Image 1 (cartoon, rainbow, N blue to C red):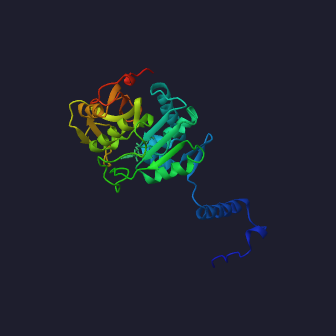
Image 2 (cartoon, helix red, strand yellow):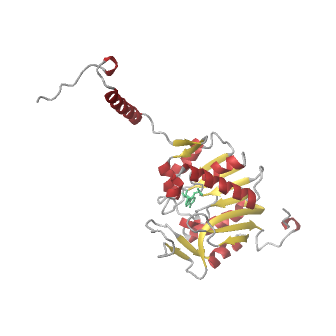
Image 3 (cartoon, rainbow, N blue to C red):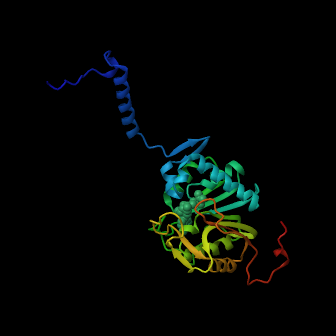
Length: 292
Ligand SMILES: C[S@@+](CC[C@H](N)C(=O)[O-])C[C@H]1O[C@@H](n2cnc3c(N)ncnc32)[C@H](O)[C@@H]1O
């Protein structure tokens, strides 16, 4: 049988196209149009602009692929800032390792226009937040810090002792780091703890999560059998010794107000609440008394 001759009549003027065939043709046309149009970089969910599913799960794990989980977990973190870290409308919040703006998305729902600074080593995620969050919420700003992290930014610069975030001493009321030390070398964490002490105003508070245990080596990278998932990536799990970590806090003038061992909602991390009470080498003055 000879091959059917292709019909040259344009679809619009044809009368012999069955609905099913018509549908298939439209589907192909729509697919071609989608291919040439710029790819959408967000999903809309209950009025929010969210990063795409693939980005979200790459950042924090598969449960964050769910729009509801991403938004609700961000709101829960914002409520933590209000209930446990003293967040008020006048607060200045610094998030180190801001990822894809999960906390920011929760914060502008729960707290409105607070001053928020997000810093992250991943250039693409910062670019996403700048494009999709900053224009709608101008008090929320995101800055890329091109420092190395084997998992998130392997080509960045080594984090040295001279590193400073571009904010003045005592600028912040709250410093927040969720899921950052969990994938960070201890030497880098030391720099960020010191920066947390510098950035916080007297009496300001910090919150962070980390894998912390007693009587373990100062730093263990992907320790076998420690978590119930396979550690297949570099710095997938970084565990610190409690005494080593807590002495870093003390050196930075940070007091541990609460240590929630394995209290984290995700991955069995521990939660640590800190308060800036001043430089341990400085003689306390009258204004050092914390009243709130
Ligand atoms: C597990 S994600 C958590 C993101 C965000 N804190 C949240 O709760 O949704 C860890 C984030 O820390 C960032 N990060 C890792 N090392 C960093 C560094 N040295 N400086 C700044 N950000 C870093 C990663 O790029 C990533 O966005």
